[in-house]
Image (tube, rainbow over all chains, first blue to last red):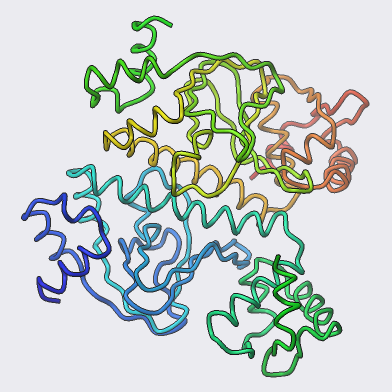
Length: 225
Length: 225
């Protein structure tokens, strides 16, 4: 990555860039590198590593909680232009929990080395503030997910999930197993299967070996409201 | 509140105090007032008000989510010396969720007017950073609670709840209904009653009309691990 490419990315995605000294800018560029993750690859795994601050250049990453029993609950997804701070949680002493982060599609990222980010945020209050402010935004995302899980009926949650999937892909066909959907929703496969059969009975979806086809977008939409 | 009392509180609990100009300090003191809440009183209720930044001087406050159906889930509790930012969420544009805050005991607080805090955090990056950093700490508290709710067995959660209660009060007697315990745990009354009966059958607790008595602290402790 050239200095020009580096500063171009930082100017666009890191508002603290203009508060840095020339030396700090140079240090930051030397501490950042690009990386590519294949679809399904693990980017960050709980407390076992400390990747650093990640800017998603293209693709999609999913952040989730993983229980000791292997149950996982999606917290939020990030897309091109989003910045992930929890992959650098080791350098933020107010963050005491661990998450896992996977590439959900082929994904290109810019990674700022965790130790370098830590040093800069000690030197420069704007860098520090950027990190905490961003985490606060993710806190809001997580609270939204939690309120879905804790309070909303499974029908509504499933409808929202299916609606989001077809909105993202632009297709009425969803190629996922009930098991995968259950994991994304933080629910059990049995619960998802039961509800999908109910949706099928109502003519909202059609189930097949290959996945789920949406037959009635309008009714699905109504269920999400 | 005199200027001396005010600056004494701020020096001890708000690290940004030393970064303020004399004018800003004066403005902050004029924008803060003390208040008393009786046990059980509502301090902040979702999006219906915007109290401001709250310093707990004595007592205890509970922050919780409330669903449309009236189900509530405790996020965290704050004690003397703790600062609550979510009661000023209206001035933090990265916070898009609403919580409720009640006094759990007779509680004395210092309240910084929300608009004044907003103005100061626009003027002074240290004030802004303080707010976001504090919210990040609460994010960790909330994630701890969420992992309990999502992943842990009810027996372990109930044991932890009972253990925390007797540790706080120093007494083996807990004067709460099953309904109250279920609300604090984010569970259903039936589930709590069933598990308490199981604990009673095991000789860990004794149930009576007045509440719960812990008979076997050692086994209760083991269940929390």
